[in-house]
Image (cartoon, rainbow, N blue to C red; front, side):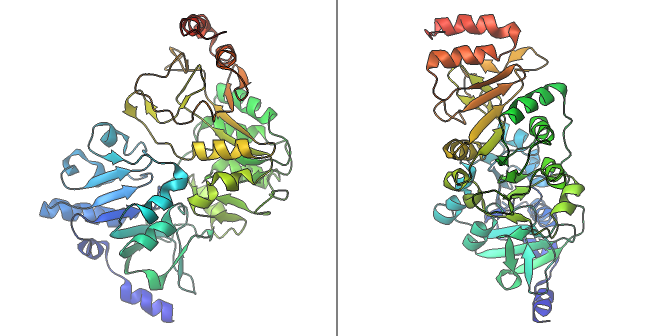
Length: 433
């Protein structure tokens, strides 16, 4: 009853909360599905109505097409993306929004040690009988941000799953809250193409029973998940909890029984998917949501035996430099946790890191294996960190190979139409192929 009374005393409308946020405040939101849509809309409405400079809004990964990102809002609200999504990409590329370069594992540390936050706001699940809300699908940097912020505002939505782990906030910590009831945004599974299936099978061949796996989003990771159905005793330690994990758990392939740490638990820091995934995660004690500075800590990752990390990229050069976040000079996404897991997996006993991609792009007109990266491209994973590269034409392990051996191996898994030109360019670069 005490917590219910406190809840009622702090309950306001989203507009009333927006009035409490001073112009030019530095605000940080939880990521993806955790962005509080009604609070953000009320902030935008206030800024437009009063034509006043609004907030500086930091979001790890926008999952709403909210008014903050409209061209006419540029002079009113500053949007800072920490991993650029399809909703924020155009604004960043046009210079209407900014972005923060960082490894995913370091996001909490940046808020703790380097940045100031006036306001933290989040979408949460309903309060339980003990006065706790769950951050639901977005743990990530939530605990660090709430500790740093001077004011905490919550938007309570009954459709947000209540997830377990280090993912809670108590009503006593909250300044004000509002309520909403819109459906949590869904991330639909991309279709698995024939090339995805081929690549998935190549990766699955390298994953032994008893491995712990990390998967990202997309057709290739989904295909890897499908190709693992004949494995046994797999575990999950992954920054993102994806739809493919549900199938592996329900089939008994994943049971987390032989993990060196966190036995019996699938560990993650955020999730996105369909309502099926939301329902699966709701009040599921076998899924542990932890802050990203734990989940993505390379030492924690390396503590798992046979840790298998599967990620994708935009392009790779003949030395093995991997670009996953820009298309030439055009910013596309962010570093995310790729390097965290590449380094952790390759330090794991029996672990491996896979960068999997189609050999070509734009309908087969462009090779994604290139002599050098497209000018302006950002190196996400360095040549010294990269382990195994996979395309539909095969897989090659680059660790322990010379520059010439790497170039030769990568050319062998490039699309046949581009191999001769790649050889020609490699010779011009004086690579001994």
